[in-house]
Image (cartoon, rainbow over all chains, first blue to last red; front, side, top):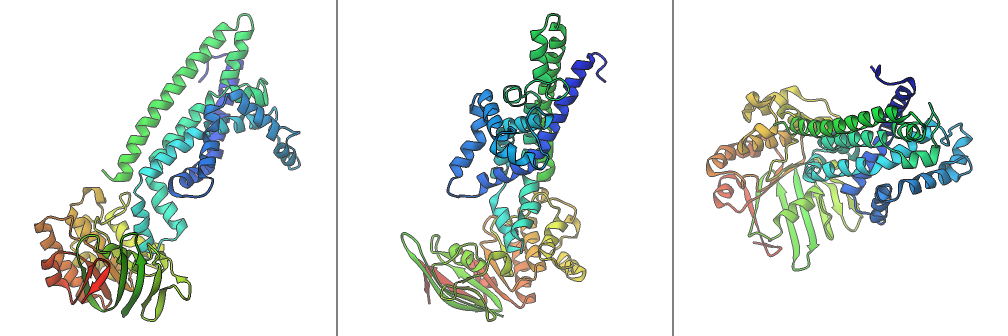
Length: 231
Length: 213
């Protein structure tokens, strides 16, 4: 499939795919829950949560990476605690998953939140009068109606995770085969003489994948919305 | 079955005060816009919590300020027919009819389902989705959905007001059957005299939040 790429380039592409897939899958349940909270609930500290979710979008990625290193590094409070259970993020591909997940989280939450907000809350009221519990309402009414946003959010988050660079390289460095994703590989190839061709191939690939993800998410969201609405 | 209501709810500009009993049959609640009709039935459904009072159906307390009881909507066994039908767009007509049983973990009574489908004339619509139904058809499905959820009482909030005259005339007989076949109280909000004359076994008039004799 990747005949036109060198083994090193292929390694970076496959690692990027793995990191992006895991970060999307792992952050999706939390993303749906946070989006639902922000769309449907009023509580003290809502603006704070909203701000925290969006922070990675605004902060310099190197700052996010630094904060992740402070918190999830082996010396950090969370990283140190998790290490006891054999969960290590620092300088490991799992750390790249975490960094990509955090950086892509705002995009995911925004898309899902919008689609929950545009789903008619009065339908949830109708379900209540028919005897639906909170859980049933969420899974039978809210979630299916928010499906277009969940799909868009996931694809955007996947594409964003695929291209995440600043936080990843700060948090987990640039280790071939472990944390060298497509952007880190492009960066590395640009630093060595004769690496321009490799860098160029990965650049073209990155542009192609990003465009494809954008077009696919738009198209899928429209199709799924039609299916959900029954038109 | 008797619904006993005694409730007070304060608004910035007026106070809703309603004391009445509704037994089997259709009790029409009429009155001008802003008289508190929708607030009253939303309080009965448990969608809002009134400031004071007591609501009982057949000695089952749904709300009591003194005893600090406020049974949540999903446990009231209420059937609510909304003005805009509020069918679930991602479910078929058949699923819309049966989803209530599923919510309450009850097996679908196939005899009852067949009966509702027949009297509401829904057999050719079962596989369709709400988006492809006319306003009248949607409201028929909404009536069926409520019948099949086996409620202790039914609330209807101007269920015909979004329909044109021909559709209204089409739906009224279904409400007559609902009234005659179910032996439970039906509270029916409307300000259309013809509707009330044809359907009501009892009429309550709300004006400025007060029941007018």
